[in-house]
Image (cartoon, rainbow, N blue to C red; front, side, top):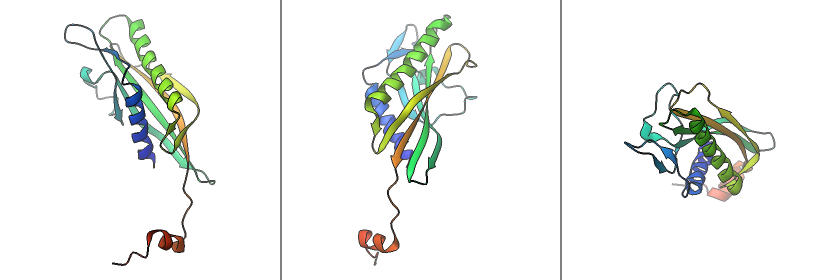
Length: 164
């Protein structure tokens, strides 16, 4: 169920970013392109190639099912920007613009398959990441009502006896 949510979120972001472009590293000049949306993220210790920027990684943080049968998932959206200039203000501005775009897309769509955005957002900026790479993380909670458990007789009636 959690992986289904991650897929739906990635699709929703890709659709929402189709018209948005962000700065990336070009060979000799500045280039702009939509962010690459991926599920999961590699270890922060392993540097990403410059060509992977800009990106948004959809990462599961926590999931649980309440006694009432509500599935709750906390998901993180790690936003990454590479900027070649020495001006750290420009890099910070660009990564925050990407984070705001993630929030805007999620708020506009709100429903992803059977999952609904619940509440607000938390935003964390990675101050340890050195220039020219900038990372910011947006975290949100999504909920879905779990289907009721079927009894053995209900399963047989619904799916059949399974005779071969």
